[in-house]
Image (cartoon, rainbow, N blue to C red):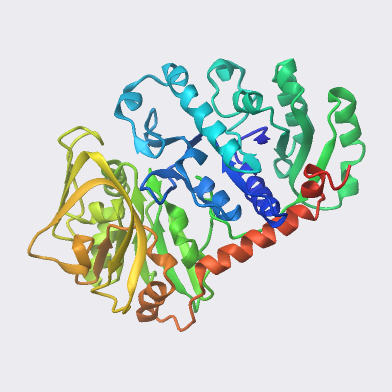
Length: 469
């Protein structure tokens, strides 16, 4: 089990690397994270959704993504509110239950999923959440030491040494644990290390003298192309000679990892836009999904980006929305059940009206393209409460009522279309791009192999599987 001193210590990265390393050794391996909080989600074969990080770890493990791998997914749609997804489906009763009252209701299901995965594979690679040192939440923590104790996991405690203070983080976290929890901590990992390892001096020995736990790996910092779990770290500015795409990162933006195939395509630069700035310099503008499309629309109006978008559409700049972005580009969002705080006027760039319904649609999708002339069926996935109806002012962009276009403005319901190489090329070439699209899934597989080899180079994998002491 990989636990961290803090959020963003690199738990998801290391868990994915260890899943691939175990699979490379011939183990039947599965990932597990009892509870995740993220608006980046993936859809499993049965239509249930899980956190994108666990989907990636399943791919690393060469396993079919399964809702048991992430039985609880919290999807924030306000500062103090998250939708609760249990075994891949929205649970309205638990969503309405106060946070501190949920754990006793959820723990039996967590144990069941954990046990079923244990019985179905040779090796589990488990990821914790946040930090196990949150003493105020210990009795209600579903994702860290409760899981480790339940399955007697070998725990690695990870610190992001790039932030500084790693030895204090590791010692402090260890001392916050109960004795039976401390007994499960088998090793410390210093992650994201830059520079000469001799600079660590006697730090590891100092730490072991106070805890009895060795530093089992120092993992060098690695720039990688794996999808991010929940926070967009990508930064960029327009590059002369590139196709420059503005990505509007409004509050509650979701599934931002679906733009990774564009981010890593040579000759393309994706620039995150959070606040008001001119959009005219960009070759196209992207509106991602949103867990609260109404709040995201209000942000665009409040910052002045709504006016910029309207001006861009009037100039004929390509504007492309996905799922929640589609809803925002329409005329309005109607919310009769109060899912997002009430009705919301939108940009009116497409003759569309969306009504939010309690039943969420989650499904893998295959759909024919009618606009970009790709010439093949596209694969994606749907995650949405909204049911969108088109007026006479728009034409179809995808079959089956899954996409529309009006002038230079296009919008689609399915996520993940940019993972289709043919669609990515058809989108980019009218903007002046002349490259050859990469096979994104093949690139992801190669990146997982590279990340696993990087971590294996520290002897961490060989240590865990008893090949070195």
